[in-house]
Length: 305
Image 1 (cartoon, one colour):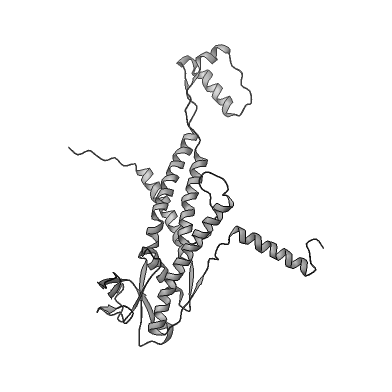
Image 2: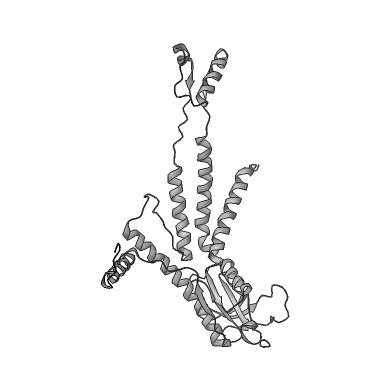
């Protein structure tokens, strides 16, 4: 006999809402990471959406249209791999049955080009999915903890004590600083202590630690903690900056390789520009500040003069 599975609908709805909110947050951060000049907004958005959902995209030029306007981008499926497991022959996926996308096999770097956005060759959403799922669960635990912090006062009383208990609670909830009661009533009122430890601060720190991992993967600078301290040590911060810049450069290089292949095959030059500035080492910031201050003094201008 199979066991009936029970489902907490409210929690499932809340979990779905949190997941959707986080997915939308990081998708929005990703979709605006780069500008492809002189591609149109539609083309740029399609490329970045493809990288988010599939991690890869194909590009081909319509020979009947000159310049960048003849370029179009589409998903694809691989029909043949070479000995290095690289896609050698692909078939373009015609999402909306437009007339100029061929149905025949396309040889990569001869009939079309393909490009990835990271060396793992995974969709961006897959790379951040684990951390987002952890953040969702932490938010659910925080939600439970908040509910426990709002637990009511509970007293064991006799029916005869109900009126006195109601009066006592009314005075407590009225924020009276001192409440006097009969000594005999104290012995009759037994408070039930709920052992609810306050862990929300630790959960919040852990939440932001996972969030910073998502930022790192996207190559976006962020102020992070290690989950146990309010502020990172200088060396930890610089190590985090190295990771951010490494992911940022990896993504940029993979996309640039795709754009270079387009230029080599079709003679169309596309310039990749990042909307995110590389994060700077705190040591470098200190040196820059010292250099600026020295230059001002040499030039005869000092602060306060």
